[in-house]
Image (tube, rainbow, N blue to C red; front, side, top):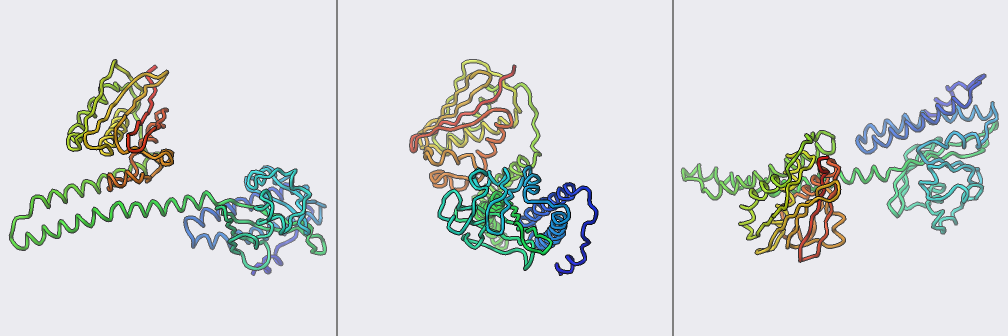
Length: 426
């Protein structure tokens, strides 16, 4: 089929603007490659169609480029000039695998300067060099741990490659030829899709976590209402304790749902802010009064003794939510008989709030992950099994949107100090 397309493609005649045509060709390749990756992640069926269209476009473009080279005498150095500003990594090499061109995107992708590889011959033995290993796997895909040929036979050749260190990318290989159809050079375009793969894995992780969060409470709610149903059928009064358990579980499920919706609004730009003058002393006192009831159940004391009034430029509702999450966590992840101490002070142009507890603490290697979506520490899971792993992620996003920052220092089994800043009213 591709051969028919090639035979029907009219050669370019009397073109006075070869560079314009080449630029259009390269743009076509870039757009097609980009479209292919988006579809590979989201819609596998559409991806197949994209690959077909990509191959057709690339074949037509290659025919045009080859004709241009034959008629106008374009050499690899001309292609070198065109590829310099492309976002995709592009390498051009001769039939004996000598690197002729190495664009800036290729330098970034391979972490090798062009002066180190241009005019150098790449061979399978280059695999032994740490600096040239990735380049050797691109030039010789069979050397990579995982290779999948996306295109069929003929040209262009579209290949998916995965390396042992987690790189995932697709290469598009074209060739130029002389009047006798002898190969004069090979052009390889590399599209990195490592980030897109990580995004896909993150989505799968999101679905898995979501299912785990809802599975247990929904199962228990079902059992509770089944018991109520059985009691009603027996004309007996439903157990009040059972009803309360069902109500609490439904609240727990609703809380997770609300957090997921908050994350969705945060990441889609749908989270609205109303910045105004906020009295932080008054705000924190109200939150402490509200959480004191919970603290009593955990046998944890809360202290907040502000020295003077501090006014911040903030969204009162959002900062109330932030403070509530942090103080509740300090209570829930504390030890019985423990304490929570809240301090507020001015630090330059910012107000700094610190919430300290005498709780379970956080391991050093877990601190940098604590604000990651869905992440929960090992001790945290043991202490509060039903946490969502979304609270601190949402808190961080809100604080950063205010122009502040949030951080934590902690000693395992001895407690944690959560700090966050908000801009003062000027």
